[in-house]
Length: 107
Image (cartoon, rainbow, N blue to C red; front, side, top):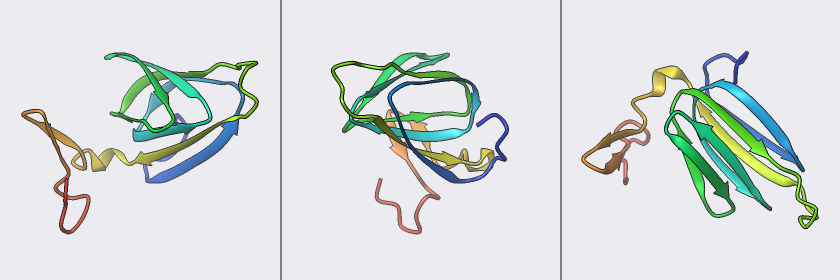
């Protein structure tokens, strides 16, 4: 995130608790066996199993708190895209479009 080059990469990790704040790339985040809490300039978001969060490039905070009732580690899969791929997701009149993500997009 902060000291990583601007390129595509995937991060998959497990932990009972985690905290990070800083400047991140365009990314998609999803979780299993728990939830993560994000704070961005647009508000607060909770992401849990079966959901995902699309974050634009910029500053954010993530926290995963330890929960005594949760016997498993929270598993996270994060997909990062380089700064030059800001064209991948654009928003037009309430509809997400991805014109260059696939040769024949089916968004």
